Length: 86
Image 1 (cartoon, rainbow, N blue to C red):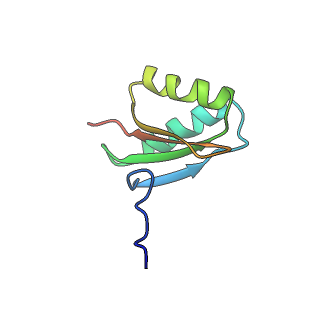
Image 2: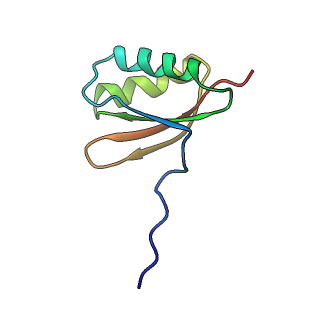
């Protein structure tokens, strides 16, 4: 019997699925969600390829958030971003 494989990304504190959400609305929703989270929490955001994955991570970095992981999940991207510390 094989052991289950570990998750591809570290466990996040919360997750939102923004596939199908256009730019810049996906950035705005991500930022609002991060602002509601406890300081230092990890949020996983699912984004479409193309403009969303090209724009959202850069916009989050410019807003002062730390991108922890970005993974291609075959058809969408899983982005992990850390909420701001106090």
